[in-house]
Image 1 (cartoon, helix red, strand yellow):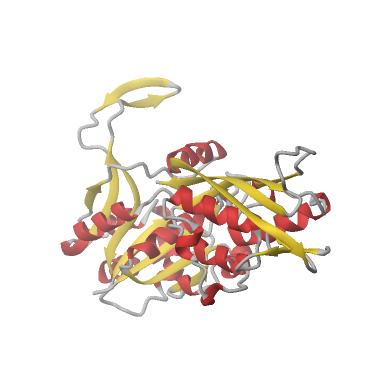
Image 2 (tube, rainbow, N blue to C red):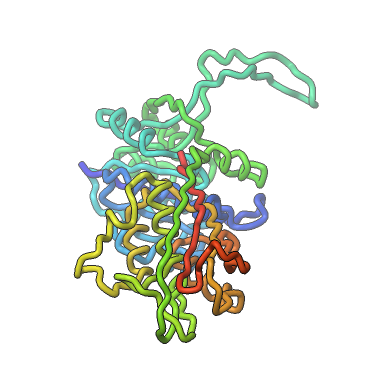
Length: 379
């Protein structure tokens, strides 16, 4: 029996005011947080991502790479229930376990998914949920009628897991009125099947309104780490300097084993420091393999070592260079780096300075850069 996932993100966003599934939290669209978590478990043969028809092309472009090779994008229906059913009809394996998850619950994590998967092995239906610990009251005309016994009350979340046959039989019974049920667990329960609850101990907030964005964003925050990188090289006569991957035409060049890009070297060292993975020389020694190599290529290789739950938050760089002035080139340098680092231009600060006539700092034949980087690990 194989696991199949249906991640539903096809809502029109009327209550939210926009398509909430593509709202960005910490540099990633809401739906991607759930999708990436499902993929990272390695337990799903197929993942059906259901999106609104107006988002189809955008989402298709965003996940057009090898990592998402087992993801099938589907257009949703007019309601959540119809969207799930449209994806369900595409499933070929009639002996599969179907995991249905709302894309608007981006806090789902690998641990919760793996625990639910283990729990559901010998269950026909398994639903992630939480026991209600707050006092619950029955209200009429804004007044409390009575206090509800909460002993047996739970809230229902997603993912919800179903044997294929259970869902198929339930759809056969209720296809004409599937929109009457708030979720598939309610539908299958109404069809006479037993729903097993699996208690979640982790926050699994559903994004409903804009206030929830702050709650979810805060819940994703983990530890913050800092790194410092510094690099200097000798300047000799040449045809240009490479700074942050951008070539500055001038009468100098940087004397180095690689292209001598001091800024990119300093960024690499700062990243290595923040990640605690050594230094640039350890990863790229002065061997023939790296002779005259582009420093941007080295940065790309280091970026591949960054864990998926780590984001670069900010880079602050100072470049020491008497001439030429770097001010006219800042925008292009930032653009070059932001595309590699996967962060916005606003997250990169580059400052230029000279030796300011200080005789004890001899930078007449050299240049350098110092970088401070901030990275954050997400829960």
